[in-house]
Length: 494
Image (spheres, rainbow, N blue to C red):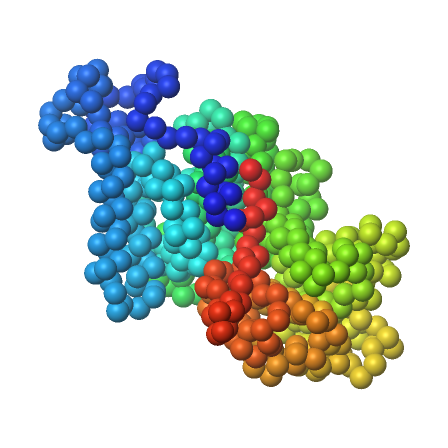
């Protein structure tokens, strides 16, 4: 998969020391050296140093782009060697820092490094390391990247949007930091998610890095620990709610549309109530989508259909599959909604009929119509107890798995290890000869189970997919348990 991605990116945007045409630069001297898009470090030839007022501002030796590339990779390998034996957390953040410093200094070299080593660096700039970065972002902050719109900017966003230097923006990733991965409310520190995702857009899809924009919509935070942190960089107030919140988002969307009417706005990591509300509110008016609801659902549906094929069955067999979804947040409900749509289209029936094969479990157990204070978004997937034999409201995961014997157990709960040994062993009794286990929660510590646990307890003849990367599992006797990635990155535009 990564070879295909790398080939596609290389075709769409090829870096070279040969300059295909003139590049207009309206800066001189140190302003160029401080601009990562134009800066070449010691790669400026003497003629350019004279034209751009750089002579004397750089060491005299001209070092080629290829030599700079090799020097960075040698530094990176040296870091790997010197951090052996350190904790995974320390090593991951150290790797992120060295890449981030390059990003801050020389974007052309940075993206060349990512494109050539996408399989190795994707887990550093994206899941799972990006979760660590967001948790520690205020302490890691060195220079701003992207734009920040806050509750204090109400009434000013239409003018603020013109502070961004690029006249054309094709892709915007927006978050309010309210539900970062499975880590909860991280406030302004959630900006790491849009930055990481857009780096993947550039490196894997070849989108012009001058036409992307990561955005943080800071409406406050309910994370008391952050509010008391002296290093916290965001607005120190509780989150806006209700109409106040929506007015801020409205103003931002109108400002973006006014300047870049064709830009795609990707909503990322919004808490469930606002994820569904904003998708409903804007999808007919603006070019936008919600990655947690639609992106996760698209990847999950592709995995579910792929599972049917791996079982040697025709796609029509998907209509008979029993699927248990653990997690009733925006991602879990989005997956169910899209899966039900797929079943309805394939069968020509109604969504109501399609619901019968799906079982939804949240923190309180199996969701049924007897549940009080049931979230409106979950109502279509609540089971009628009269249709359940041997199961009742609030039944546990193990009870549901043992009774239903599902073809697929799919986790989007954000609770690490919730697919425990007992649950995984129960999947051995699945009605499928090749059951599927999808542990899709991020980051790695929040995965419902690891690949080793799945193959060890559920059996070797399973389909395993995860939201965070795991290594393939050695099953012995030359057999390998293959790990499939079910991450939203595979559905990003481009």
